[in-house]
Length: 610
View 1: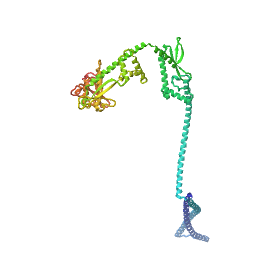
View 2: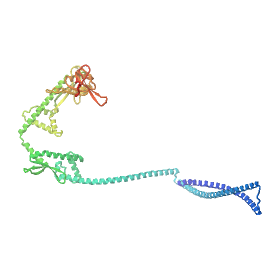
View 3: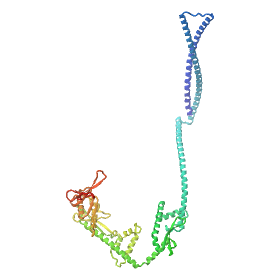
View 4: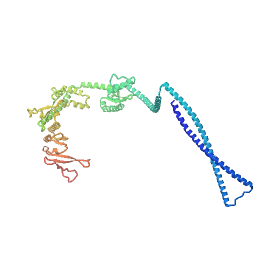
């Protein structure tokens, strides 16, 4: 209905140019009709004049004589009239031509006006028809509105919504089409992937079957016992059981299921087995045994077999390695039982006598060094707060194993059999089995006498003393729960922790028979130390006769009487920024350091170092 109403104004608008053309054609026709009437009137007048002149000429011609004027003026007048007559005739001809063209144009305009009038009549009829149609549509609209009670705006809104849905559906269709194109591409990619995956699955299936056969060969050739020992290991009947068996074997052997690591482990194991065979074969041949590797047919597995060496240089009685080891183990056990107990006792006596002596010597030396440290630190106190430290090193009474080990090492065995000592330390070696990287480390740990002792660290400070007796020193023991070091300043902590190390170095260098430099290295000598404590430290270094090498950001703290004579190397940087060098100087205890002149090898005339 709305489209019918909207079409009526458009049809009426197409009639406006036709109406304008009809009006213009009518105006042009009227103007040309008036011009034609004027031309006809002029032609009528000229025709009358022409007829009159023609009649006069005819009458003169019938009279038989035409008197011609002889007078010049009359001749000029006659010539002038003839010229005017000629011009009038030409003008008549032009007017006649123009009149014909005007009549032709008027006829065309009349025909166009008639066509436009006909079209106008037709457009008027069409307009009347459209008006009737519009009226009918308006009537239907009013009737539908009356029947359905729907406003025009609601219908317009519904139409707009429908058009919006149409646009949305077109966009959705475009998206679906793009998605369909993408889906086709995806299908092609997935098809190619499916084909490649199918080939990979077929290859994996073949490899899977081969692995299953290889795993079954472990049981068919009775070599699974050489890899693992578990009642759950049975010959797999299908893939699921094969996977479970393979996992159990890998777990028992401590290996991961990674193929690369498994291949590397296989190559390493093969190389290790071959190397062991080459290394042990000469010794085994001495006792009539031959070891070799044989490949199991159609399985990919190799087995180590042991054969008996015959006198004729032949081999017989090839047995699996496990059976051969069992036989050899039984033979070794029998030999151990047959071993002479007297010889065993003598061996234990010699070994443990030397062991006891070596450990006792080291314990005595350690106790002497600790005593020297205690004696060295006995009178050492910081300058202001009177901070001092005392160290003790004694058997660890709270550890029964340590007490037992020290008793067996330090107290002599009266009967000389060392059976108790042997049994105790063999048991300790067994308890430490598998905890160390090598047998030597395991033995070192079991016989480490330092683990049988413990340190006791005691600290004194001026404020620890009773105010009633400030001169009586009070020592506090450092424990896991209470540490008197936490109450000290940063400089006191550093000095207190350095003193035992310096005392230990002094005790070591003071050991009887030591010859060599008494060298110590200290970085940032004056870090966190105030001037009095630094002076005390320098005095100790000189008193204990150390060959000390230390670093300082500046040499000024060294220029004190406590240092005595000292060599100083100042680190300088070259102006290029890339090179550093040292300038040596010597300070003798007074004045300023004097630069030392160093002889450069190979240069004549260079002075010696001062």
